[in-house]
Amino acid sequence: MFIRQWFPATDRRSDEDEIMENPDVSRSDFVRALGEIRWVNRNLGGTAAILDALEGLCEADHPPDILSDALRILDLGTGSADIPMAMAEWGRANQRKLQITAVDLHPAAVEEAQTRTASYPEIEVRQGNALTLPDEPQSFDYVVSSMFMHHLSQAEAAELLRAMARLSRKGLVVNDLERHPWAWMSIRLLGRLTAKGHIFRHDSALSVLRGFQKAELEALCREAGLEGVEIRHRFPFRWVLIWRRTSPIDS
Image 1 (cartoon, rainbow, N blue to C red):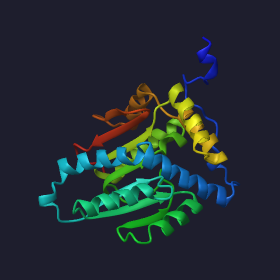
Image 2 (image 1 turned 90 degrees about the vertical axis):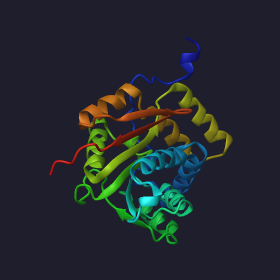
Image 3 (image 1 turned 135 degrees about the vertical axis):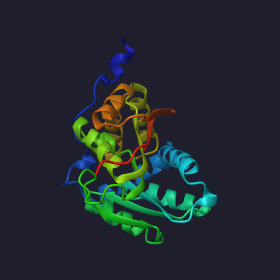
Image 4 (image 1 turned 45 degrees about the vertical axis):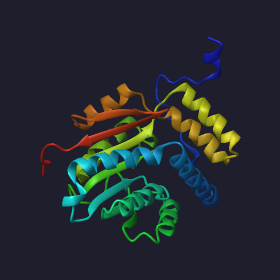
């Protein structure tokens, strides 16, 4: 009982807004927070989670010896496009041609992503709403989303999965957080020990409280009409959803 008093309730998702979602946040603070998100992705497993899942899908669906056309990949909620850049580097190192579209709604994120990807001709950065993109069904081989779904309500998260499935020809990958009290405590301590900015210290802990438990992810997949989704737990507090298309999409 004493220990539980140190932690917030994690029985349900928080609906509190993160600072980065406030349109009045300064550009300099926003860009610094994007840099700290890149640090998290690089050092706490977000980038590796996406690359490992994508590599598994590609090995099964597109062996390198028979691959000719570029694989088309869509990244939703891309932030400053660090994960598309990592995918591009992976493609170059493994002789795989990739054509990556990175989408974010926030204009400052789009501008930062365009600047950072200037030397990556395989990456196109676009501004857009992930839930209402105008692209035709199955426009991309794979659709990925990393650390984005927890920003959405339950209904929006299910709609995101439906949109990703509609746009993907082969499958989708979602990487997001496990809502767990020790995850909350750990990221709070880490933010202070590494002298991160005030947005990171606030939003990273809140992101954990807006994260998911496995039963909630299973319910989201059912609501989105997705069958056969593999939900992997990734150490220490991360979920990876992998869905492979097994039937043609409805027109």
